[in-house]
Length: 271
Ligand SMILES: NC(=O)c1ccc[n+]([C@@H]2O[C@H](COP(=O)([O-])OP(=O)(O)OC[C@H]3O[C@@H](n4cnc5c(N)ncnc54)[C@H](OP(=O)(O)O)[C@@H]3O)[C@@H](O)[C@H]2O)c1
Image (tube, rainbow, N blue to C red):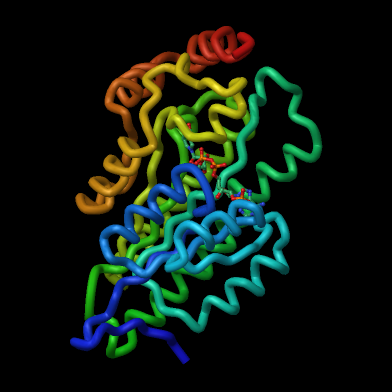
């Protein structure tokens, strides 16, 4: 049985699920949707972050799940199958200073699991849910359903020396593009977000508490505004800020060995 939230006038309140919505950009997007009147569910693995959200934002529904665990993730998705939703955002991500610290086995496993494997598991489930939901009679009410994936501008450049993070975000971008094409016949919108640096706590933690030296870094609110605009305009791949988009686009026109040399000498500097 599907759970649909209705107000007294019989209107459906749209529901958003933010996977990786317990901090940073995901939480900011969750709070923004709450402010717009959406019913909001967030998923994350950190119990302290979940407890904080339960305290500070009691209307947000929280789910604890370690996305690196396929079985745990599947059982959460099975539980969520009883709930209808209009939008799912995949903002879960794992990143390290890969070029400064050697990528160890644990970080490598975690990064691949969250940035790629769990993303595929969640998108597969979410697209099938939306297809079923919007073939039912109730479906025609409310907003066009959407799947949104938070990748990174790092995934927009194609070069052999790319990090695991950049490669997994690149794979994300390609996968989202395939989903977008596949879901056209179902009128389900699919958008991918490839942003530059965002001043979140996670990025600051990786940079000794201050990420202000990162080129063209933007506030979390500025990133939320860009993302909401990209969803409204149904942009397939939203790359921002504009300055970073121009730079990456110019770099992508260089011969591969030159690009590789430039990025290698830039990225191997201690940050
Ligand atoms: N900040 C930037 O400069 C930047 C730039 C481009 C793209 N991005 C992308 O934006 C997204 C959000 O980044 P952020 O800076 O906001 O970082 P963040 O605050 O660390 O957000 C990551 C989210 O992923 C969740 N997550 C991580 N591991 C998980 C696990 N094993 N199981 C379940 N959930 C897990 C975290 O929840 P728990 O901690 O509760 O597990 C958190 O909600 C990421 O995909 C990142 O790659 C960030």
